[in-house]
Length: 510
Image (cartoon, one colour):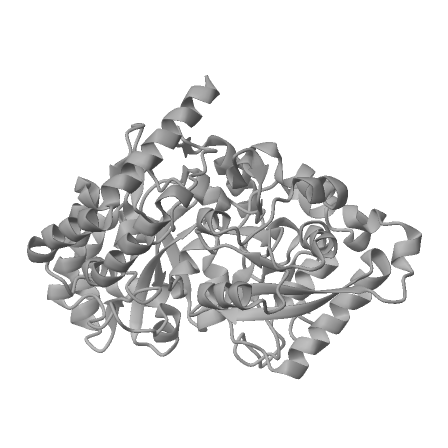
């Protein structure tokens, strides 16, 4: 399934108080995995594991990647007797590559989900981690906390560890600040998706060569992210099936809701007015690529906090800003969408967990994973901020995974890009605690009994959703056909099974 550039919407910053930055910032001494026995640390044959992760940046050359591996292994081998082979994958084919690796038996130990944890669980592609966490990742367990770990459980077993970041995400318009200023529009005047039509009209008039909005991924315009208080009930984050809306505990077909119809009608209006990229349903070109080449003004994606524009500016080379289109919301999917799991094919699960723990607790390891080699790939501005070397950017340094900062391990001990306020971490921690929360928070759906229906339903979704999401299909004509085909594929069975499991889960909470 294509979870490609769409996952810009999950590049959340993280949430923790500033004291956490210093408390967790001591490098190897902070890692619970560093408590390994001296005999193991001195072993002559370290365990080797493969660590897969998506990068929104370029895939580095082999020799540049190996230099980062060597630097990381200089830390991990003495401390936990583990060597890592890094496997950065493009967002364009991340999920396909992970599934192929597992199915083919290719060496793969650690990887993360992209809103599809329940599918990996139902296919028996990941192992239960409870004993491994208890033995080799107590530091990570304490950091993430029991409440958020529950979001990755199924039938009482923990199958993954959520990336530690801001979980309460909100949809944002990410835009060129110079163009917004030239139009004379104040970002403060934009409160919701309804305020964008007039803005895009001004962009189109003044900059006819520039598309007002582009998709973050093939077939993902961003309009559906602005549906408020929707709990996807651990479905595919970008292709939900049966959901909860608002405070209701009644499971419904997502595509039959009034909210879905309202948003795809907006997409259709934008398409007809020329606001959205005409081939958005089929194009693989990133919105950020179009922005970099002065062909696009904005995109819609979801973020935690309010300071991610500094990272996007560093990626695009353009002055970027962002403004929220709705308030943050917490559901199980927000927490477990990006969760780290160990493949069922792993031959070294203990070593895999030891290394995974270091991505949450060791400042040196996580920053090498994200930024590469100091003074080659980045330079420090101060204790908590970095920038690219003079004359370099994200496309020209040998290695960077900067835009994966909200995906890999613990973002709170990662450096921030120059210009990004660390005050945002405090905001994210506050919103993690205080944002509106689904009544089904902590519920994880087991799709095993309806996996045949899931396969059939996903085929229908793949056929219709990109065009409806990006406006190239007329909702008046095609939405009824879409819904009918979903029902023929077994959508009602998915809704019923999810309701059954949710009712049982809610009864246990009383």
